[in-house]
Length: 97
Image 1 (cartoon, rainbow, N blue to C red):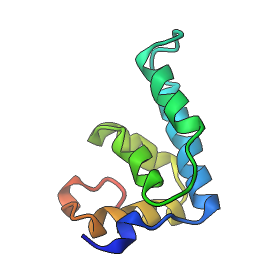
Image 2: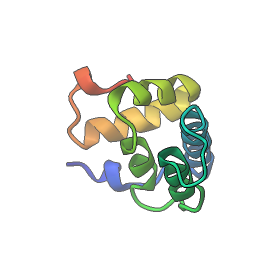
Image 3: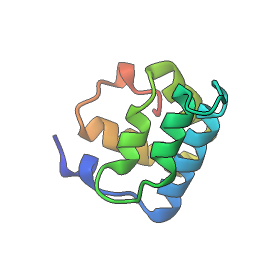
């Protein structure tokens, strides 16, 4: 596994990933204490260090990673894609390509 996976992206890209992930989670159960709310709470306070951007991405199954990818700019998608490849993810399972 390459060090890139554990390298934080720029703050702008991290903030974009974070905002898009929260948007995807808002599509689910909004009840207080619900599953989606727990995920959002985890994301809201996370900082841009090490592999936290990839931690956010890994919260989603492949279909929802596709939904996340659709909300990201080309630059942010490429940052996630490159880190997934560096982490050993086969292209077939990489919706950020």
